[in-house]
Amino acid sequence: MTKHSQPAVIAIFGATGDLAHRKLIPSLYEMAAAGHMNEDIIILGIGRGNDMDDAGFRKNAEDAIKESLGSNAELANKWCSSRLYYHAIGESTSEDFKKLSARIAKLERAHGQAGNRIFYLALPPPQFGPTIEALGAAGLNKSKGWTRLVIEKPFGRDLDSAVELNDVVHKNFDEEQVYRIDHYLGKETVQNLIAFRFGNAIFESMWNREKIEKVEIVVAEELGVESRAGYYEKSGAMRDMIQNHLTQLIALTAMEIPASFTAADIRYEKVRVLRSIAPIGENDVTMGQYTDGEIGGERVRGYREEKGVRRNSNTETFVGLKLHMENWRWHGVPFYLRTGKRLKDHSSEIKITFRCPPINLFTPHKLHDNSTESHSSANVLVIAVQPNEGFRMSFEVKAPGTEMMLKTEWMHFSYSEAFGALPDAYHTLLHDVMLGDQTLFVSSDEMLASWKLYTPVLKRKHTLHFYPAGSWGPEFV
Ligand code: BG6
Image 1 (cartoon, rainbow, N blue to C red):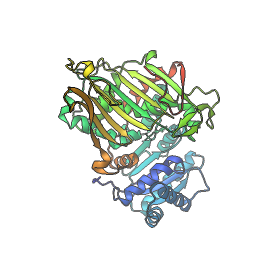
Image 2: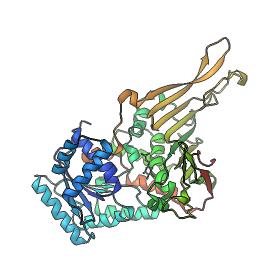
Image 3: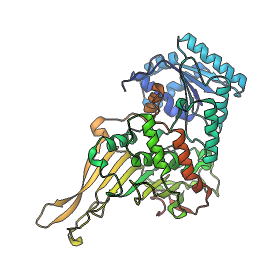
Image 4: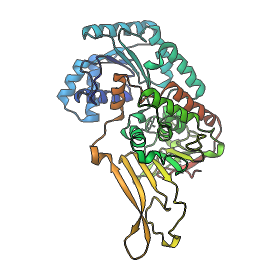
């Protein structure tokens, strides 16, 4: 990260919440400590509580940094006490927002800043709209410098609510000011999909229906709903994972070659792919919910027994989808998506299965394949999004010996071997917001295209297939 951001105030709404504590504050500190952000940047935490002040917020931030990074306490203390401030927004009335505006202006004067501002909404989704309206009404949607708005997911809960929220955003901010977060786009392995596809000529000529038989995208989690039942009960796996994270993986895997490596061209191609996905048929959807089971040798509760979950809840914790693309590149190639909580393993990957050779010279009795991943002679490319980030590709090779026996072997690339530890996604995304680079953020068109695709599925009634925690989920198309 060599480019440098300008001085700015980063105002975080929801600064005493979980996301700020676990991700935002530690990432900002990490960037400051590594010299990846302008050292004059100030962070203004905004929350409801009047019982919090600058000192309390700094202390919480230091704890968050220690918990997350185990960092040098003295350095963290110095950074927090010189860069962090807290502002209580009260009931969020227009008067409260005027006071916020005055506080920001005062901080800017005190720090000799030109008026660059980032408003980060790390808030519960129902508060997005009212907060954006209030920012606009208080004139905080523009300033002497630049003003940017960062919105966490989920952006809406179906097409209508997303359109409504988007209208509020566009009434108050220009699209160029808006950064819709999907933290998957900040993952190195996800960004690498672009490098992998368009930086290596060998793959591009094979990346189509002629050579590829199917594409499978899996995001499997061992974790259950944890302490987030309140949110998850209203969301389910469709809204929590499919509409955003898995959709980003589809878009980057399937998009056409952009005209240039700019945010506008890349985002344009991603929208085109989403628009080319055919309406999802009833038989192409599988929904499930975990029951009690065993993970890593430990008994775990079923979803309906989790704290805060209704005993008769029909919220899906697993979704399997089969998608069909109506475009030249992918016509006839199924895209399988699968995501679930409390599955056997924690693993996210994109698996591309190439077509088998048109003629099989090696008769079945001569085939020898003790691989657990491939039982045919198709070449498979697995892009490991996490963990064990990297990729591997299978080849059929002749096993040494007098007979012609084939064996599947794998060629590997590992990020940790080549580069060591990878940066956290939030580090990358915050850095890009500071620089004003929208490439890794979801555009308005893309977000709407995605809701347009999934809203009919969300509106339909589905049979819920129960699966024991620690399994691979229900059988699916
Ligand atoms: C979040 C979802 O957006 O992504 C969580 O709300 C999910 O339910 C998480 O666990 C997965 O993120 P990651 O980076 O751990 O794969």
